[in-house]
Amino acid sequence: MNILYFKVSLPFSGKSTLAKKIAEGTNSILISFDSLFYENADELQINRNPEGWDIIRALAQNKIQELLSSSSVVYDDISMLFDHREQLRQIARSTNSKAALIYVDTPIDIIQQRQRENNITKKRDHNIPENFKLILSKFEIPKESEDPIIFKPETIDDELICKLNDSPLSR
Image (cartoon, rainbow, N blue to C red; front, side):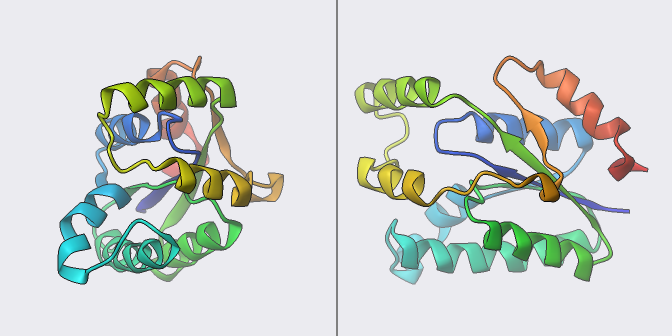
C-alpha cells in the first residue's frame, strides 16, 4: 500500500531537508510546493500570496493523487491549516493509500535564527517577512486526533526514517 507523507511546519523549520531524506529513506517520490511554484508562477501569472498559494496547492494535490496510484509520495509543504491536511488525507483515502502526518516541531528561536541568516545570505529569496507573519498568525499545530509523528531538530534523521519504516503505516 502506498503512503502519502506530508509535513506540518513553519518556514525555516528544516522541512525541505527532512522531506528529501524521507523520500530517499522510503523510496518515495518528492513533490515540492516551492518547486511547483517556481515551475508555474510565470505561466500562471501568480505571486507568493494566499491566492497564488491556493493555485499551487491545487496543482500539487492533483499531482499527488495521480502519483499515489503507483507510488508513495512525500509532499514538501507547510500544510499549516487543518483543512489543508484534511484535503491531503482525503486524497490518500481516495487512492486507497495511507497518510502519515509529520509535525516538524522546531522551536521558534531556531526558526528566527535561520530566517535572520537567510536575510543576510539571500539563499532563499522567496521568504518574505510579511508572509512569515501571516503564516505564523494562521498556523494550526496538529491536533492529537491527527496522530502526528513528531520530529524535533535533535531527532536523528535515520531514527525518524526507521520509525516511519517500522510504523503500522508501512505494513
